[in-house]
Length: 78
Image 1: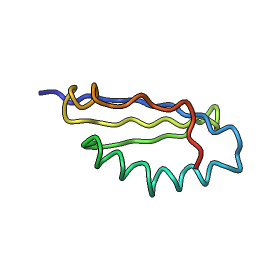
Image 2 (image 1 turned 135 degrees about the vertical axis):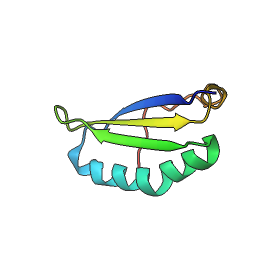
Image 3 (image 1 turned 180 degrees about the vertical axis):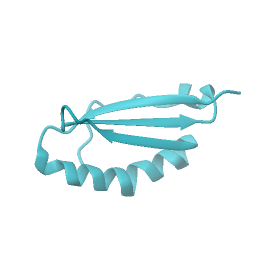
Image 4 (image 1 turned 45 degrees about the vertical axis):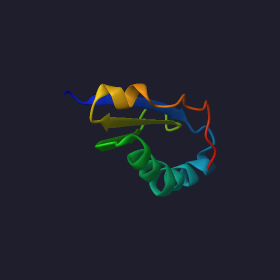
């Protein structure tokens, strides 16, 4: 069965909060996502043209896992 990809875009408007966002993402969010949803791989990027924009792509083993993801919150504060 082919893998499924889930793409998330977040805006961290305040430059002073980006380091805290990175820390939260690395220490809490990614390990939780791997455990909860069986993520195979994840990639993350900060936009070159707009430094406030962060994007993450998650590879899940199959589409059924993607369909079971809860509705994402509109914003997350570290």
